[in-house]
Amino acid sequence: MVLAVSVAACVVDATADPGDPRTEESPIGFPSIIAPAPTAPPSSTTVVEPPATHMEAIRADLNERGVAGSEATLVEAHKKTWRTGALGCPIPGAIYTQALVDGWQVVVKVGDTTYDYRFGSTPSPTLCEDSLPTFVGAPTEDPSDI
Image (tube, rainbow, N blue to C red):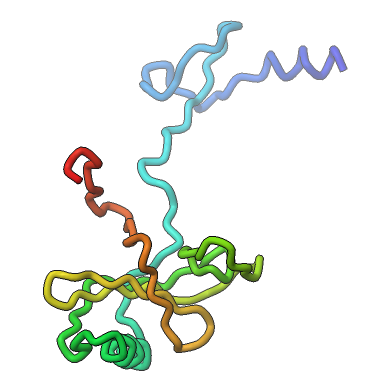
């Protein structure tokens, strides 16, 4: 084992350029390449138009709530994979499947009100009333403004 450690310490990356800012000298005097950090976390969402059936279901749900569904305008729609059947919007005390669920997050606006709808494997919508989505690159509210 001591031999393996000794040999590993003697290995030098012959392609390393000492003038490269990503190259630094290791504590034992050999250059080592530092990989640049990713600039943004990978996203599990893809921005696309939602299926027409989803928009129809949203309009019908809004009409049932006394809101003019015909006035709903699309803000954003994303294909998503959630970690549970809660679709990213759990209700306290409810029990959900503990499996990956492919679906959609569709955000619409009627007047000044924004509605965050979630879809799982069926075309029936779930209105996420407790939180609005945070999309990659979207501005967040400053809590001091509330």
